[in-house]
Length: 220
Image (cartoon, rainbow, N blue to C red; front, side, top):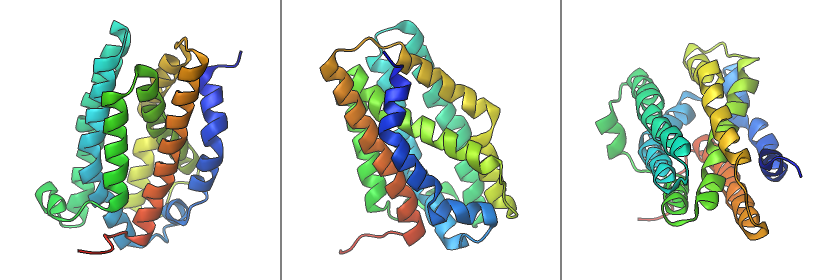
């Protein structure tokens, strides 16, 4: 039987290809991405990352083994320490602090994606939680790795690329994939895990698209 990570990538790989071809990401590497689109993305990250950390902590709470409890608890802390710190510094480049960013609205895709992750990781089975959370790790790692080979003439964009292409982030993702491969699942659990993974991958594409369009609420 194939490794579970291979089955997950078979499901999400096509979405990843569309993500990598997205004009937001190509704009990061050639420096053509409008700063307002990147600003939108960074503001949305200020809204999203606390819920992402909550989803990781929920995975820790649902983990059946002490090693995976420790792993997800550590990753939740690292999200707050490393990714959140990056967002705070990127906001400062736009003359904003975190309080300013939180006064700006969370976009529909941000609300939907964050809610899906927290709900899946808090209320689902551990395989469902892992299926929902792993593509968040893996797609960012693959994007960072691919973009690092191209870098960017824009120092702000290059800084973002270097964070997610860094070896330390790749090692964190490798740990999550090892946990995934260690699961012993029924056919039904496997199907539910893969379903969650596909939904998360689609939300990842939507998140880039929302930043590209500078998505807002259609009414109210």
